[in-house]
Amino acid sequence: MLEEEGLLQKLKRCPKCRTMRTLNKHVDFKGGYAMYCKKCKKFTNVTEGTFFETTKVDLEDFFVLLWLWSSHASVKVACNVTSFSKVLVVQYFRYFRDICSWKLLTLEEQSLGGEGHVVQIDESVVAKRKYNRGKRVKTTWVLGLIDVQTRDSVVVYVEKRDRCTLIPEVKRYVKPGTTIWTDGWKAYIGLNKEGYIHRTVNHSKNFKDPRTGVCTNLIEGHWNKLKRYCRTKNVMNSKFFFEYVDEFMWSEKFGRDAYCKFNMILQIKEKYPC
Image (tube, rainbow, N blue to C red; front, top):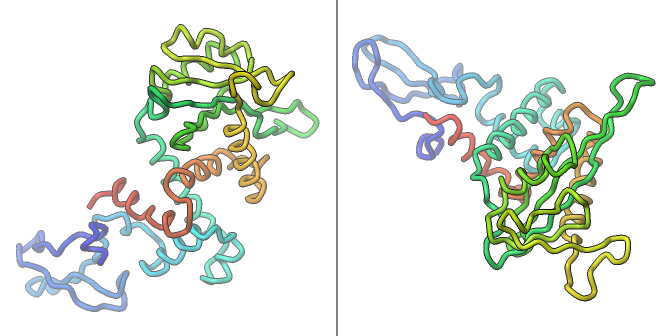
């Protein structure tokens, strides 16, 4: 099956004698099989030249770990199920999050909105971390954008909340002609001049403008969902916080349930083609 899915190479000729190799059972090799050259009398790992060549666990165990991660199992539960060390489980769970980050970077820019679409935008503090004990606290800001019609979303880390920082990020992810809803934060002033239809709600008076219907309820709900996710993982003030933000964003787009998340294997194939 892995060969059919393009995760393992198909049988090839021996690079030394050019004899076509065969697939033989062999308990000492990953997956319980090995490629065998009758002329050279040499066995070769079926994972040669693939992503699995450098993995420390057997193929079956790898997919068990992937399923546990997909099911939101904790590291402790994964250790109990597999009998692997905490160090190894953490390593693989971090690897899966690395794939999440990689896939998000491959997505097209200006993926949100378009004519007839509304995109809600808001910034939020998602983490506060001390540099050192007794020292000042670093505030981490993120900019969130969500398409009301499709529910596609983007979360961007920003150093500042000023116009010079936020407007370029909006232009990076939102298509021209989109109707944008924000609160009255001054940094958004001028979006109408950038090819957007900009509408605002004054949160000091209403959560939803009674006249126009403009609100930011959807993106604020998205913030609550992200923060709840990171609190569940206990990483709000962790140095790994951003990895979990990427994991959350990836899950929202590709893995809303365990079965969808398990399809990460297709993205592993995309990143590491045979």
